[in-house]
Image: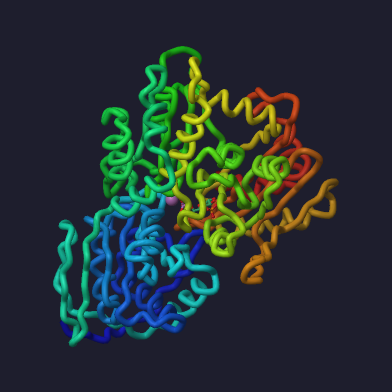
Length: 551
Ligand code: VG1
Ligand code: CO
């Protein structure tokens, strides 16, 4: 195939958010969009690394427009002299599996990858499209790189493209093309093989199976028509023997079946109903799990019981040594600032260091590369370890099952998910926690709202600040990462989302630590905190009205 230089013009807005680029399909499918971005990635990355002849990974959550984007990426990659692309069968690769493939396939020969996902955002022609670059360590590119890509995108004049035919990615195997004398290989790889091998090396599947085979234990998994389906069917169906009827929505669909592939109490309604959350009577399974579109998030439910993600990472930390690949337990952990302090309580008691980072997974990578942490989590249903450099939804579910399997060994009566939490709260106290999202606000108004809040710092009778993170590994500083109001045993955090494709979302996180009243309803436990905040600091100061216009 011949290489052509194509004239183009900059397309605004190619600035990575919390996790890569997220745009409406209508915007991302305009002429030159994917080509411009991909060219910028290769141009910037080739300044740092010699990418000629190298291997890169491409795959995503199977959403609408991924297939077209993948063909475009092949053409730009070939023209930029990439030697080989590993692409998942039919373009399917979960976000954590891309990270694992970059790090481990053929001894980690790959220089990085492009992940096509907008994660938990809805898909389809009217939904979102996303694209994200991960570097050689398998982690989302750090800000230094994404900022350079953005700068490049504002001045791009041409991109390179190879005149390749449409390449079939539905069959596993290799195809080689001659691109002006250079070989360009597209190798279609199994979507699940590398990931399953990794999970086998971390967990004791036999021990988990003993739990799953108990007559008093049953589980349901909701894949939400995202990319988790093939992985979950292989691991939970084929290996662990969970009946296929209990693996819900396990076929990846381009529009996620019209749903919002976000595993929380609102959007994972099928699962929530099956598990009886909020119901008084009935017969329900003992364990439920769900993942988001790209399978990096997880939600864990017990029978009629919801595990708050901030608690989930704390429970995993407290019980880490029962997972075979972490015999030494937690050596250090990190949580994003907005995540509750439940993990701090475990760190203090067990004596491991704890790091507080800004929202988004890319900040954990440096700490892991430096060997400072082997567990991290976010309140937004993200948990993972140093087995990869992304959050990993299925890994987190397997952690929970390992903990339950371990605690139930030799027990006549099943110790439930709820029992595990109650025991945890008795030991460490409980951090009641809730997050409110004000979506689709006008961006300028949202910024004005944050600014007015910051101006209220001096009249707040507790400690208030604008969170700034100093990375102890690369010494970079990320400022303006969220406003914290801390007083006694409670804390309220405000921040603007970085994953919106249009407008702005204001997130407010409320939390309160209790050592006595451990079994209250969350809303009731937090009522005084939220009321105090809203009435004294927001309503009275008329701040909420700034947002309410769009509520
Ligand atoms: C949200 C979450 C954040 C998470 C990010 C990416 O970001 O709050 O914790 O890391 O999504 O997750 P924001 O900036 O909208 O609050 V995913 O599964 O969408 O890659
Ligand atoms: Co995700």
